[in-house]
Length: 530
Image 1 (spheres, helix red, strand yellow):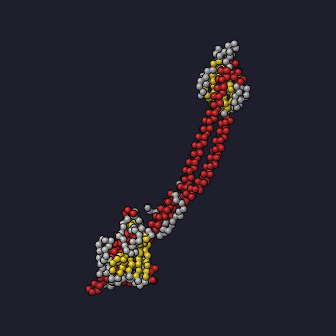
Image 2 (tube, rainbow, N blue to C red):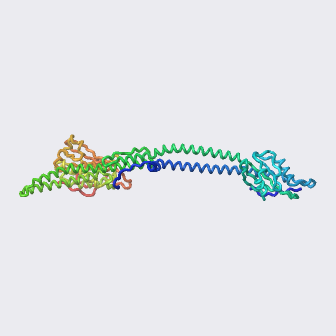
Image 3 (cartoon, helix red, strand yellow):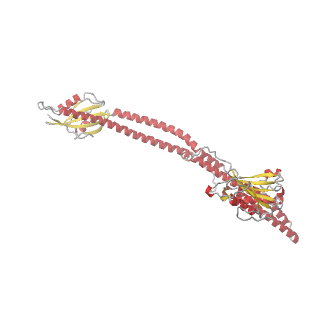
């Protein structure tokens, strides 16, 4: 008898009074609108979504791997069944057997794996099953038996039983010469493995929740540290007023918020400097203009309009005081402008050209023997600064020197580059600065010795100092009482590339002193003072 197994392939408005909020509104404004809490919620949401996604994907993967393993075991059982059928074909002299005899032989010789059972059906009714008792009997479940018997071809499937989930494969079987229709069912109970997967997923969820709570605590601390500069920024902004701009934020890191705090501190520095300049200007203006205004008012109140001589004298006094007031205001404005670095109009200034320009302009200030000093110990550099303000500072020093020297006295104007600093000086041969006045010579309205009769407001050297500081430099005094004084501007030098540097002709000494009637760098003669 020949057994044929039928199978297929495998399957800036007005300030309003502050309103006090309480209750839920206060919680919403101060709770959920807190940047610290919002950062924490967003972080926890991201962590929670990540953990949830990982859990879902892992559950899917574990279930898929379980199905693959079970399908592999079921396919192995089917291959063993086919091998058995091929080897069970009877010879010509042996009596033929039907489907039932085939199933009896199969169940007698085939041992199922753990959590696995074999069930046979003949004409839709349960026939035999494996001797090992399964977790639950499938042949007593009429719905399952009907589903198994209706399989027209080999197929995999899933079902739920009293013992949990099963994965099965059905193989229709026919034997030549036997009209009976048989079905071999190989089922694997997967509830134990699926319970283990569920326990694993449940444990990972608990660990994920623990990690989420831990992340919440750590995130709250780190969010607090991250937003601390913002709170300091808020408190500093609240404490700022026109009379108090001293609040600053301590910066310890280099992140974006720390950079914001640094920028805020720089803004406060500029505001404080601006308010200080404004207050100083108002104080200086009130201090200096009070006297000429009092003089003019006093003369006008005592003016005798019927006396032409007295009227003329009063007008002369008033005009002279008004000119002095105008000069004071101009100097105060210049001082206020020179103190602000942002008011500079920087550009590249060649040092020899600047010295030459100042030398030529200073020659017309007074009949002095103006001398030019050049130092050639270093190659010429290029200043990066405001040419007009630097020229004004040197002219102011030259004018100051002219006021403190006699006619035809010598005054030197020079400069050099030393250790990356441009030194521009004006040196005179006058009496020098009295030692008692040396420490206050650069203060506002400081008039020393012979300068008190010059008619100035005492702002010249203060302007020079402000210009030097605006260029991140300084002005120094080398005083020799009885032998003159040297005022030096020290400005940081911005060197230019070698192919752009200007080379001077060789000089014979260091420093080199030239009378002003000598040519300047081969560009003609300077005017001679009488």
